[in-house]
Image 1: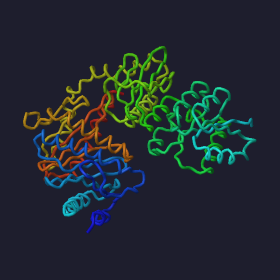
Image 2: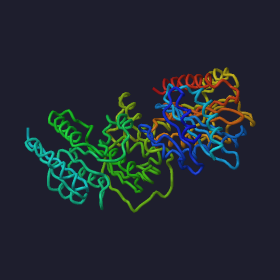
Image 3: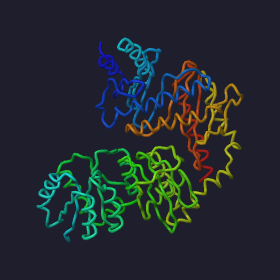
Image 4: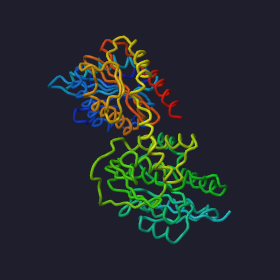
Length: 120
Length: 385
C-alpha cells in the first residue's frame, strides 16, 4: 500500500479536511495540497519548529519526549505527530474541522503513523 | 453624475488593453487611464485626479506600494485596490471596518473588476464609502507583509517620528516617541495615519518583536475597537501616549500576584481533572506569576520561556498556512499532556497552562481549561473597566 493510500485511511474520521507526511527537513512527501485556504506545502518547515520546540520544552521540563502536538484554532484542529525511530524520521499531519472527532483522529494518527514506517 | 477617472496599473500590457476595451462602454461614467510601470502611474497621479487606482503590486522597478504612497500623498481621498496573488479573506473580513487594504485576487475576470469599480464609484457618489477604502498606514503595512518586504518604514505624526522595521514581511522592531517594540507597532497601527517614507536600504538592528504580523494587526484592531466602545479615542498623540502608558500604571496598581485567591479558585477547579499535575500562569516575558505547585520538581519556572516560544511558533504556523487564529495548544509526551492557552487580563496578556499525566482525562482538561480561562478573564476585565 502506498503512502497516499495510507493517508486515505484518515478520510473516515468525522470532520476530516486533509493530511500530509513531511520529511524532518520540512519537505512534503505526500499530502492533500488542495485544501481550500490552507497552504499545506509551507507547513513542513513551520511544523518542524513547533515539534522541535515541543520536544525541547518537555525534555527540559522533565516530562518525557513530546511526539505529538495539537493546535486548536478558530478554523479547526491541526494534529501533528513526529515519528523518529533513529533510522526513520518523518512527521504526519491531520487537519480537522472544529467539530471533528478528535479522539478517533488521534487513534488513527497513531495507527497510520505506525503503518507508514514500512514505507521509509 | 460627473465623469470620474480611474487608473489601472499592470505590467502585462495585454491585460491593460483588455480592461481598457472592456471599460469603454462606461465612458459616460468613468474614464480609464492605464500605466504599465509604477513610474508612469506616479506621473499620471501627479497630473490627474483619480477616484480609484487599481494596481498590481509586483511591477518592474518601483512597486505598487510606491504607487499607493504617492497616491496617499497627492490624493488622500482616492481609493486604492491592490491586485495580488496572495489573499486572506478571513483576515480581510476581520479588519475591513478599520480602513484596511482592499484587494482583488489574481487572476480575476473583467466582470468581477467591473462590478468592483461600479460599486466603488456608486458608493463614492452617494457618500456611503467613508473610511473603508481610504488609503491609510494599515494598507501599506499589509502590502509590506504580503510582499514579504525587508525595509524600514518611517512615520511622522504630530511632530514626532517613528519607524516599523520589516524582515521578510514580518514586523521585527518598532519605535515611536517614547514607545518601543510591540507597543510602538500597535500604536502606529491604531493611529493609522501620518507621513510615510520607505527606506529599502535599511534593516532592523535588533529584533524586539516576535509576534506574527497578522497577530499584531488583529490585536491592534481589537484594542482599537475596544477603546472606541469604551469612549477612548486616539485622536491626539497625547491621548494615545497616555493610552499606551496606562498598562504600566495599571500594572503597578494591579499586582497579579496579589490576586492569588482568584487564580487558586480556578486552579482548584482544574485540579479536579483526573491526572492533574500542575497549573499556572506566566506572562509573555516568561515570568511565572502564579503556580498551583511551586516546589522545584513541579515548577514551570525554568521552561516558561520555552513554552512561550512554542505557543508563538504554533500561532505563527497556523497564521502562515491560513488556518485561523490560535485558541490553544496541547503537547503529548510519554509522561504527560500539557495544555497552553493565552489569557487576557485586560491590561496585559499571559499564558495559562495545565499539565496532566499521560493517562489523565483529556476531554475534561480541555473543557475546564476553557472555563477557568473565561472566569479569570472576566474577573480582571471587570476590575480594569
